[in-house]
View 1: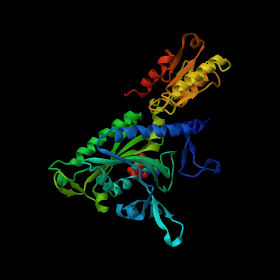
View 2 (view 1 turned 90 degrees about the horizontal axis):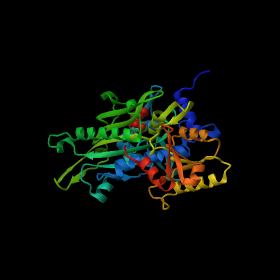
View 3 (view 1 turned 120 degrees about the vertical axis):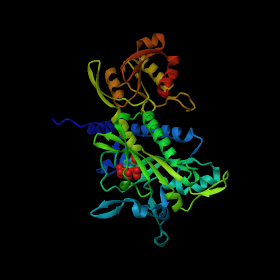
Length: 418
Ligand code: ATP
């Protein structure tokens, strides 16, 4: 028998357990599209939420936006994408932007493009942000959103698809002429390089599998003066996970935008440092980093060692036996208590699952396989002492905890900062 590759195992787990399904599957699928199921969607929101808090909401110098996916042809003419956003196909250049028409009447339609990157959304709103908020340079404009690329050959699961979500910001800095001898771009490039590593650790990507690649000058994108690719050892090879680019003043200059510094009374075109994070590639790297086959109590198991704040389900609650109504009733109460805490929906655990199917060992295995960090079991002792067992996914160890302390203890375990 041919043994399954790690990639096949990840894809099959993702489908079977409701992380990721092939797009349009009941009609034979549509190349380059994947649909996130309930667990994948939870994980995706956890990734987005962690990113937004880290890079936008907790900072003083970042402005978050959500711009349109359809953008005017003129945007892409100015940015250079109409000319340069191409892949080689039979000796010719194939533009990988998706083009469409907006409007119903033939002579009133406008050609539009589905954005292939987020960055132009930030650049075309640069003046709006400056006018509304008067930010002092340096500052950033950030967004999370969907991009579309007509990839010639989509492949490798979530790695190369035709529509995907990105998390990205443009960080505006002074040009060299304004920097009093010091090169701001080098300083901020280094600053964001380090922050990207912090993110990699925080989200739980195996950092030993991440490598920086200095992109050679002749391979730089048309807008970039320096780019570092953060590559990851995917099961199919070492490939780009994230990018960090110095986009110079290419975009703002082409959109004829500039900045007036109230303090120095100078007008100039800011330069830009751009960190980009692909969400699909993050999710794939996380599944790969977290996927572990080991033995626990003499039994083989598969488990996902996801960080609790990224895991789709944080807590599972079981009655020891399905056919004992008093255990089931108590387990339902504990389940409701955790899932609905606090009742107004603020900063609680929420993502909790109830399971009374099969024996307890099987339930543990099912939760291990989707990365649930804590399993709670309600047994006969619970009925007497009002405590439950809390089982740790990684070690299989169990501890008894009083029900009235349970939610707070779980919250501390799940949301602790490492
Ligand atoms: P590649 O060389 O792999 O095509 P790229 O250099 O074109 O990538 P960028 O333009 O730098 O990629 O895109 C920024 C980020 O967007 C990448 O780091 C990656 O995380 C993500 N990304 C790009 N293309 C795809 C795709 N087809 N599917 C999924 N994610 C993608």
